[in-house]
Length: 114
Length: 117
Image (cartoon, rainbow over the protein chains, first blue to last red):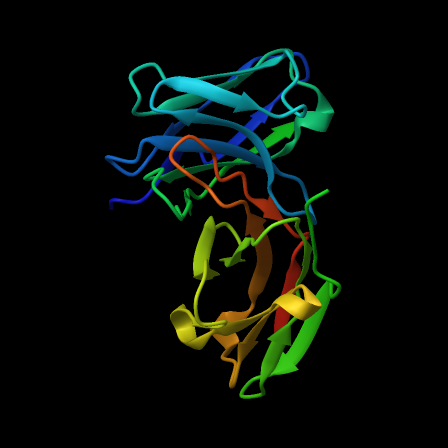
């Protein structure tokens, strides 16, 4: 499968715990995006990387959230001191970053904070 | 501000009937427009996209969409739906992008499609 993959697919955690999600983009895609999707809503942009550089972060990304893409390939999204409001689907997408780019999405990680 | 409105939260159509899902956008420049579909437990799959040119765009699974600049709309259509089309459909708009810009897609809130046997 050469699509975008995410791990884990599901995560249940207790409030206050830290969680980390991983995204593996389509190979040779130099842009990687993170989105968050809450129930009944469309995805909302969180942050994106051009290769290993994190170039933009949404106001939704509080200081408890951190994302990395250390070698310009896979990316991790960490949430520290989780809150119940963090419960959502976290989606990763990647693109070639070319003109008229198209983003391809992974299956997402569903987070439930108890 | 850029925004996407999908006025129908939930639509039910009979199998074999035609379908039209509405999408209106607000964007200052010529937008890039997308329709994605999301099935339960699945990620978003791109159905079709419009960047420029012919305003009637063909996509996968027999879907098409028409860009109407005067109405700021990009409605999705299918002449005959199948039970497997039951899913959540998202319209999205993105900015014109160059090599130094990010295509930060703005999604609508989605329309849930149910198929009546």
